[in-house]
Amino acid sequence: MKTAFWKSKRVTLTGGSGFLGSHIATLLKEMGCRNLFIPRRREFDLRQREAVVRMYKKSRPEILIHAAAVVGGIGANRRAPGTFLYDNAIMGLQVIEMARQFGVKKFVLIGTTCSYPKFTPVPFKEEDLWNGYPEETNAPYGIAKKVLIAQIQAYRKQYPDFHGISLIPVNLFGPGDNFNLQTSHVIPAMVRKFSEATEKKKKQVTLWGTGTPTREFLYVEDCAEGIVMAAEKYDSLEPVNLGSGLEISIKNLAEKIADLIGFKGEILWDASQPDGQPKRRLDTSKAVAGFGFRARTPLEVGLEKTIRWYRLNRSSIEREKELDACAVLQE
Image 1 (cartoon, one colour):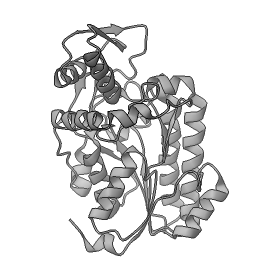
Image 2 (cartoon, helix red, strand yellow):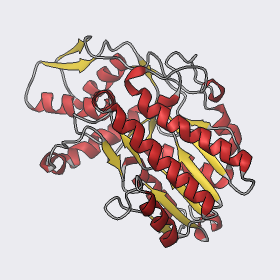
Image 3 (cartoon, helix red, strand yellow):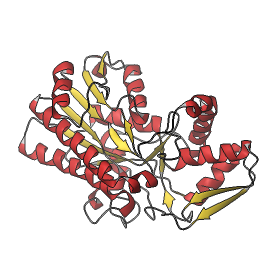
Image 4 (cartoon, helix red, strand yellow):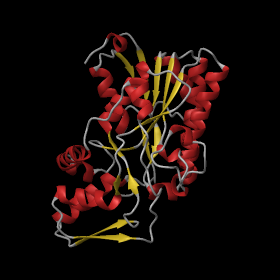
């Protein structure tokens, strides 16, 4: 639904052609945003200060949503921890600093639940963010994003005209996700593995870990809605979780996806591979109180839409060359 608020705003959305960013861009246009600038990596490599300056000079945003990130699953994080730390930190540090210098009225940082300590009490509360070291396999990525939350808070304290907020989405999934088995997260990896096994009539599928960890998942369109709502209505020093508030074990998730796809074989677990964080579920009460956000899409409905999208786009996905890099830069 279009609103007067977005109709009049100049908005820059980094990462606007990536998985989450593309859904944010779609929603902003639906809300009536007429002046949306999406910098592309080939022209604006945000790891380079000069490119960040050019981006701001060209777009002159009133609102900047920073959704660009180097992301990947456990395997990708293990292969290139330095890349995950440096690229995410340097992009964010420069984009935030230049937002201050160019007088951006509102800065929206998209963080990650990987920033939370490994043994955070469930449900994760925002005030627990600083109470320990993140889970080792994705700690460099989580720490990079954590530094940016600290930067937002420090700038708000030092510079009265800087209005930056930090949002912490839980694990996302949905149409347009990354299905490359070398770099994907758990849901798209399972969707692809079970789909291929079903077509090839395989009797077994092997998945990483033990299946015992629990995770919370948020449908990507719901996340985009939460981000847009927060950009308009939230203005506070404290970070805010975005999630569904519902938890499922990886084993039960695998069984659910296998059933939706029609895989009838056996699911094996490779316990020699890491499980990642033991449990993950967010306290989402601050998002409800702060700007009225509640997730709307049930997990099974979101999975059905994701599977449908994958099947419709399967041929184009398979034609794409498998990425040599271990991380995907979400443009």
